[in-house]
Length: 32
Image (cartoon, rainbow, N blue to C red; front, side, top):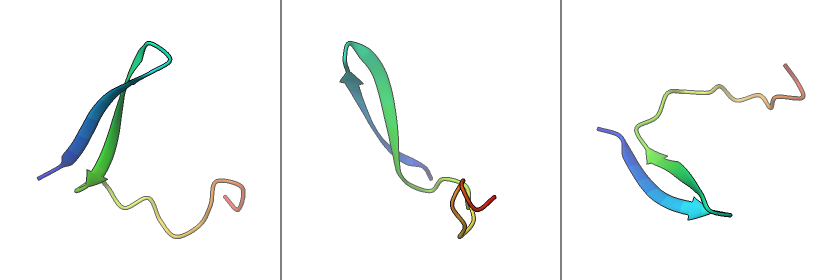
């Protein structure tokens, strides 16, 4: 199950994934 919070930021819809999202790995984007 994916848990999210829907909101608006600067008039644009946003969705923040709280839990249940895919594993993005332990490294940062800069290290990739």
